Image (cartoon, rainbow, N blue to C red; front, side, top):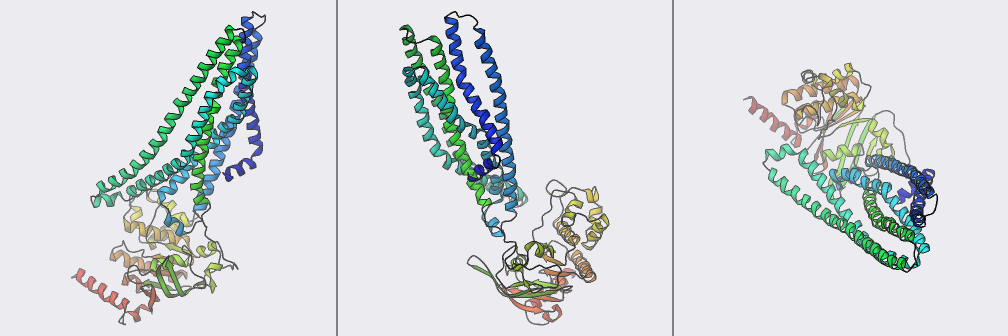
Length: 574
């Protein structure tokens, strides 16, 4: 709630004017039954010129309508501004969190926080705020007016309505816990839908659709159960409030008629009292409505605070040093663990400007982890990774990543045209530069066969590309970024042998011609042979390194890999 109060403070003038309009509406509402009572008394007494009451009533209703529009528009507009700012801030903060944070949260849950939870907060700022003000202004003013008009009828009217307040307090106690549970379950439900739809081909391939339905049904049933509990409370609140209001009205009419017969009460006062009961009913209900919205907003804000207050990537550890050009990257005695699981131990690596360096090793030896540490997607230990002799932790992260283009194992294409996807790292790239990059990536011929060439929509809403085409498009996108160091993490895994050999040759020629450095992570010996050096990781440690021509002569992992893949090639050709 601190964020909401800070926002109100920043826009205090708008909120002050809206509050004045709201208070004005409430005062007019309190005064209207009094005018109506006087009008009835004037009619009964056959007073002349009673039309003045009708004119006054009409004028006040028009003024009240204009003021109500003013405060509702202002509050709803400011609620949208707050929603817009908070959603933007939450998304910006998500882009700054370290990778470790994203491992702890499901994508669907994060999407739920940026949509459903923000909606709950916006609803409070639109109507919950009005409800709480009405409780104070309209409720208190009405009670005072009823007490002034007739003290005896006051107790008949107010005591039954106290039951509404008691029930409201009971009602609000359960809303916070229940609504947070609903939001958490909705986040899990969203995550399951996103997961199953993303992997629907895998589910169909393994015939496991029934299993997905079972998992989804379990989460959906929990969501239904928790939401039904809230529906029961909401359904109970209205009728019980109406019951107490009906009792209050009955008691007032019963006592009022008795006083009328005794000549102790005017008919207009009784009419005013009946109207005041209806008027007082909303503030009594607003206690529950406002507190319910407040509790929901509080629960949602806490869920959003998990994002807003999450630890962020540190742009640069002091003392910061700037790097403009790429000369050399070194890894020295690198150790890294995911929690208690040690992944890398005593790793060393070196790549100079213009060099091609390969990284090989068995599955699970830490190759991908190493690539993420090099550009601080994962945070490396102090004094282990250096660029131009400077610890990467002391280089501004934006400058560090501006030196490197990274192509990870998992390729993602945005729902954009081919041209827009390729220009992602270089928005000003010309079509000639795009076709040059596509030629190097062995993808130009494939793009020419697409329905609209570079303007063909790809991604979730466009044409479906094969795994190999996606990898080559990602490589072309990386080449267009035109950075000194290109890092490819098993980027040829979906390519056939012929395409891979041509692509490796093209990349090698491109890197030599343009003095680019390349770190190539691969299981394929054909991709590693053109490199200047190969580093072999086994059990998370550097066990072999040197020119590939020398390593394949030794009795090590690379030699074994070479013999195995040569034999596979002979078997396939045979």
